[in-house]
Image 1 (cartoon, rainbow, N blue to C red):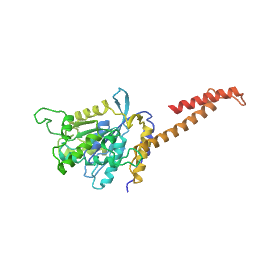
Image 2 (tube, helix red, strand yellow; image 1 turned 90 degrees about the vertical axis):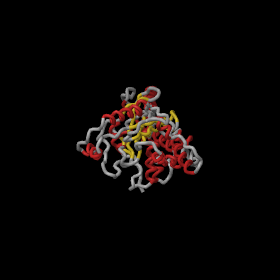
Image 3 (cartoon, rainbow, N blue to C red; image 1 turned 120 degrees about the horizontal axis):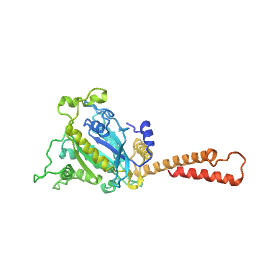
Length: 362
C-alpha cells in the first residue's frame, strides 16, 4: 500500500513562508503535458521532469521552488506556490490511489488547474466522474456524517481552471456567434434533456463539477510544437538536452493562463476567510491529511485544521518562552549583576514578558 508523507525539503521551504499564500496545483491524466505546462508557468522549464514515453513521470505532488506573486480580490499582493501532481489513470496504479492523489490535491490548493484534452465533449466530462466521489473522500467534521452535499462541500473546495490542450476548434455557439473559452465550458456543463438512467448519470457528473467548483474558468492552448518528432523531444530539456522551440501561439496562451492565475489569486483558506493558511499551516494540514489517508480513513477538514492550529500554538508558545528567556538574560532590561532588588526584578521580568508576548502573536 502506498503511503503519503510531506517531504522534508518541501516542509522546510514552506515553513519559511509565514504569510498567507495561494496554492495552485495542476492535475490531470498522466502523460498529458502537465509538467511541461508547470515549467512554463513558473518560468523554470527544466525544473519538472518531462517524459516522452507512455510511462507516468511525476510521482506524488511536487512543489516548485519558484514562488510567484499574485493579487487577491482585495488588492493584496501574496505569494503563489505552484505544485505539480502525479497524473491520473496510470495503468500501474489503481483507482483508489488516483482518488487519494486527487483528494490531497483538492484539499491543499486554492486553485486547481485541470489539464484536460483538446475538447469538452461527453467523454471529457465523464472523465471527471471521479469528482463526484469527493463527497465520499472528504468529511467536513468528525460527527460521523458522511456523503456531504456538493453545496456543503463546495465552500471548502478550490477554484477550478479547465485547460484545453492542443486546442484547434473555433469557438462558436449554435447561432454561429463567437464565444469565450468560459462560455464554451459553461455551455458544455449544462444539463442534458432527458430522464433516463444514462442521462441522469451524465448530468450527475455535470452537477458535481458545477456544485463543487463554484468559481470556474477555462483556458485553451494550442499544441506546443508542430511536428510529431518535436513533440517526442520535449522532454530533452529536463534531461540536459536541447528541446525544440515552443510555438509562439502556445507561449501566448500560457501567458494568458498565468494572468488568470496571478491576477485573481485565491488565498488558501479552510472554509472561510478567517481560517487563512500560511506556509507552516499548509505543512501541518498536509501531514494531517496524509495521516488520515495512511490509516485507511477519510480526511476530516475540521480535525486537520484543529490539529494544525494546536501545533501552530505549541510552536508559538515555545518561541515565546525562548524570547522571554533571552530578553530576561541578555536583553536591554536584563540585570547587570545579581542580586537585585524586587523593583528591578519586576521591571526585567515585565520587559521580558512583553518580548515573549510580542513573539507569540507574530
